[in-house]
Image 1: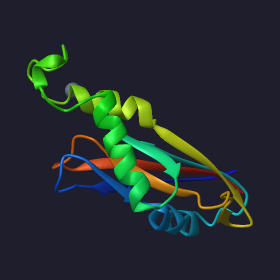
Image 2 (image 1 turned 90 degrees about the vertical axis):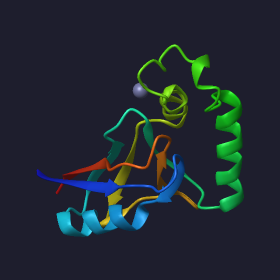
Image 3 (image 1 turned 180 degrees about the vertical axis):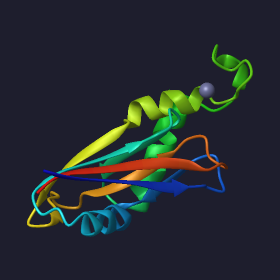
Image 4 (image 1 turned 60 degrees about the vertical axis):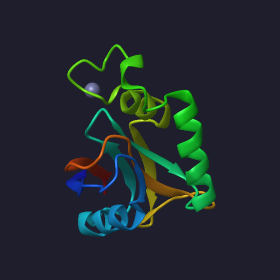
Length: 138
Ligand code: ZN
């Protein structure tokens, strides 16, 4: 069995962002030379997510509004976590949107359903953060 590991780095100018990382995951898959297997993609930080959904700007605004209703950023003092930090909301948003995705690899390609794309969800940005891509198979 072969395995391949790669880190993808992001530094978003805003506190929150959704970034389509599908092409970078595809690039990692080509570099791995793995044709049949599994591809894990996970955020390496507890205030960021990796998830699969549609690359549609209206949906992304809906995610932003929905997450702000569930866990508003402000006021900061509503969260017990916010003593030395101000990112209590970001931890909760990440929990809802998930840590990782696993995608099947078939014939050297990511075996997606219709419209599926992989996104990095940032909830406490403006600093360098990582996504792990781990691919195993043959
Ligand atoms: Zn924190």
